[in-house]
Amino acid sequence: MRQDKIMQVDEWYSGGINTEVLGRPVFYRRDGNNKTDNTDHQKNTLVCIHGFPTASWDFAELWPTLSERFDVIAHDMLGFGRSDKTRRDITVKLQADIIERLAIDLGISQAHILAHDLGDTVAQELLARQYDGSASVQWLSCVFLNGGIFPEAHRPRKVQKLLASPLGPLLARLISKRSYRKTMTTIFGPKYPPSDAFIEGTWQLTVENNGKQMLPVLIRYMQERRENRSRWVAPLENPKIPLKLINGVLDPVSGGHAAKRFRVVVPNADITLLDDAGHYPHVEKPVAVEQAFVEFHDGLIAE
Image 1 (cartoon, rainbow, N blue to C red):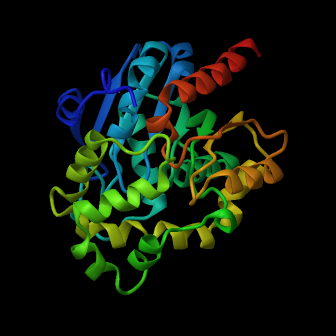
Image 2 (image 1 turned 120 degrees about the vertical axis):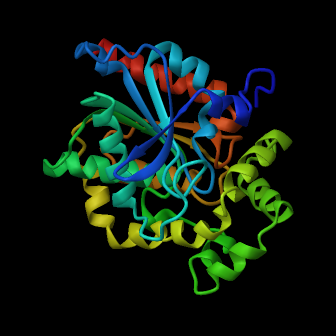
């Protein structure tokens, strides 16, 4: 992690906006060149979608580079960070609805996607809408970071399985910062363990506003992945837009084994493997992720 450059939690949120989307309080941050009156410029709009159990602050290390190049937007999904944590009817499809409506409210009709973990699944729902012709926003490309893109290649940790079980509400109450740190450390690569700043910041965002109670609700996305596999994998089997995977190979949940599955399923798969990174490559090796991401987008411009 680039400790000298990362924005701390308070700085990240002080630079964002609290709004209402589909009747729900939602935090988002938007930076870069946002000339939304220029249709061509929207080809340089980027929507970042974070994962479970963290929040949009995950992208703080990449933010300076992304905001120099794009009109870049990241929000806290429902149940995470500083967006609404009061409801129990949260699904992947609702998270996708929020993104589409936020984009429309901001005057965005087309954009690229950068997604991680649960964000990968939400991105897949957005791409499925484009695939079947029901999308409200035109997606121009999608870069996936580590996530359960294919349920058959997803290896959830024991704590995830328990959170998804009837014991979930009890376990959520018992989770402590110490156990949270231990779990996070096991999914990072050993060379780049989570920093104290990352643990403190993401733990703060997880627990505030009774956030621990949301964990068993939000983890239902694992079941949704299984139920919607055909719908969410179809846009990858027959892609209509450029796709890329940047994968931290040492991730025990969705590392090198998931990248192998991506290569099998996605035609002419574009994959960058980070051999010494784990589940949070954009936090562990942000420079390498930036390089792979920028090279991918430079290729789109060249085309």
